[in-house]
Length: 515
RNA sequence: CGGGGAGUAGCGCAGCCUGGUAGCGCAUCUGCUUUGGGAGCAGAGGGUCGGAGGUUCGAAUCCUCUCUCCCCGACCA
Image (cartoon, rainbow, N blue to C red; front, side, top):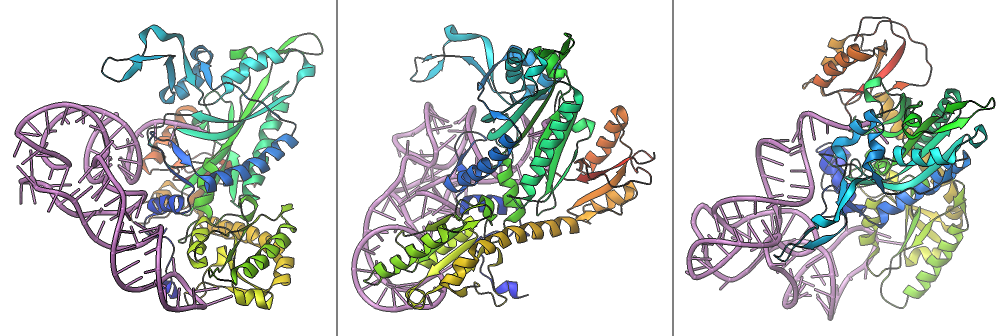
């Protein structure tokens, strides 16, 4: 293997310790850091810049569906949750609660909540906003003419999870949550599935992250939902990551909050509601989909900078001319359009050697790095590094020398190519790690045994059991540390017997270890 | 929340058992040399040893409590 010659930018390789590698990418790419507050992270400019790119693209698409952005309170009265038993039960164990509004001295130099300032009713820090938005919907909706009501908010939420991991499961995280109300089930279900498709296209487009869109089994539903759909992505260690969800909530929340409308015949009807969201967890998904042993590789569409120019400064009289050349190059590139937007290009003029700065940008995963020296400037050339194909076979960094004008003209195509190749690479890896030939539970157990170490997913025939029968299946999977991810929406024909129940299969499921 | 590990300079670590001047590597700064692919040499700066309390003439080191992180589990749209 020529690989052994390569001096990678990270100290931990994916193959050696995936969890440690993941954390090293985050710190070395300068995306986020530990905050000192339990389970909460500081998202640094590079990580937040990626989030802002996701926000921008997704926000445009959400608005294109007709949804409008709003903002609802961070604090939700406990009584709002109490109205819906299943919902409150689902979140009760992970809610942060505000009980006081003032501190007083404890007489020992410290501060304690003032017993005299105890809130009459505790306030929950929102773990999700169905209840408080439902209360608003009940005020906003009177007539069939008010429907559908399509709202979205970009917000932070808090869930007091026992075990946290940066981006994947933090106590506080950022997300968008859409909440809609409809006249009937048909309309609400159409909204639920439209958004699921929007999420699929967003993941597979801008994020270059292949996903399976499908319906969750009953035991994995959102608390209070009639049906839950998800997009599921395979990480490089073979585990599944739930990357987005869309819920059909039936009339459950409408009943709890009194969301009713008067129909054309003058009768009172309950609304059918939906909710759907994606979060900063997507950043974790991008890391574990595209990262390599040199750090992150950011798909061009969500890269805060798509091209970084590094002048090889010598701290002498030649620097001024070199910087002029680089600045002209920057302008020429910024005038190009790639993937539907102006090319985002940074001229990194900070003092320091280009070789040192190069590795910092490689670890951040900028798609194209240009190192420009005096010889390039004199010859009208550029030296190009493509982040997603970094190494030559001999273990050296793979620079390409190109004519400047030729590179500028090809830059947009190059970025689009990188975007596509990252997707294709991830899709090929995922498809190669799905087993479709497991007909029995013994097969399944063998594939996931300690010895076999099969890391991917299994696609299996499924008879769609519910209730106690489903619980029994869930328990058997749990013994193998497996979970049911979802039933794909692709509508492919199904035959054979469900290995879990022995009954005729009606659909398929994906089974996997999960984050 | 249960079991295990850890917190000492920006980062990575040694020192702790057996209490007695705060150490090393990388990074940073300065100078010189080098310069088309992750530079070399010399010098310098930088630390309430996670926090609080206790034992002691004296605590990074011993004791108690506590906070945070990592791993395994449980939990988790």
